[in-house]
Length: 468
Image (tube, rainbow, N blue to C red; front, side):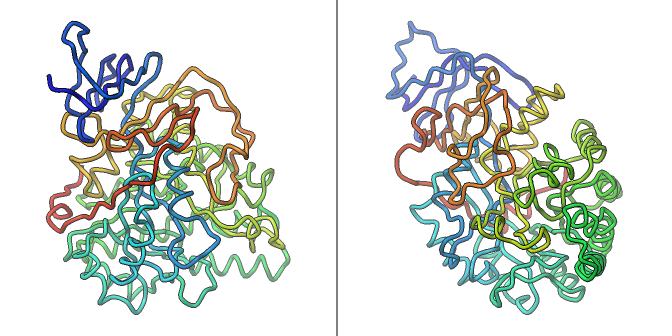
């Protein structure tokens, strides 16, 4: 065997179907060997990583991240955001078209986004394009420019800036689906039915019902289900491939699965906050736990876990939606507070904690949800998403036999707020490797310079992606 750049020895490796004790050899950023190194063979490597006692998993692919460049100054950017992701075991992220100014709804805006990310991200990334009113003619050029898919809001995003991302009206959504269908790419949807949400919100504000429970009631599961139903109808008419983001209810999951059983090309994600937090936590923690859709009841949460165990949920993403702390702490009430959770740094650990350690779900299932399914759905296979010979050496080493408490000073976010501060975990990311390069260790923190690369999705890759 030729000289290797890195060998990882003694780890318990999590594959898609099996878990085995074996070694991994890496050369030029790729996995070139999986097996057992014999000391008598005289294998040489510039770096030997001892993974004894650790599990080696494919790095998480976080398909739903908001890093707020360009144009938002003091908000989370690529350096801090990618640092937090890497510290959490993520090796690739898909950046949403908001909340940067301008949002990524034209090729020019995409180029500004990519320029901002150059030499600023520790891990690899791809970019979403946006579907908004008045910009339909930009969809095909964005697809040609290599976006991984398109994102649309069916309810108001809530950003008051005149240049900010806007939700679609019915006409824009229908015509946008027709055009996106021709590109072969996926449309990701924030599914909350705006007429329901706006009416209930206005009633709460008019009556000065401003508690966390009132906020939760203003965005009911019925609004999620109504939006899913409408979008599925439009997709059936247009042939557009759909992906529903941050689904928060089992009722919506079942509706989407029924559509897939009937032949539609549709997938869905949920997020760690719906699986680790409840509406009670929103009342206790306050604005740091505010998101949209809102956190649901403990009973709803358990139903989501049942959906995961039965294979009805395709993937888990962070929906990392950071903001300056003042937008959380200085809001006059929960309705005025920024509606997004900073959670990217702990997505993988939370899912190992809640899914594997507490509920005994197999690690093979979790690696599919966190890595392989996002890679499959969004055109990153065979480069990303699993541990196999020929794939990028995107790996995370995890200790499943350690305890620690999440503290504010551990956070890599630009603004160090999170609903998980104070939470006890019984697993921890020890090391993250991106294309063969160690970018994070628990002892040293971030290592080296940001060298992450953009992954552009070609039309051929998009067309080859088939439903499960």
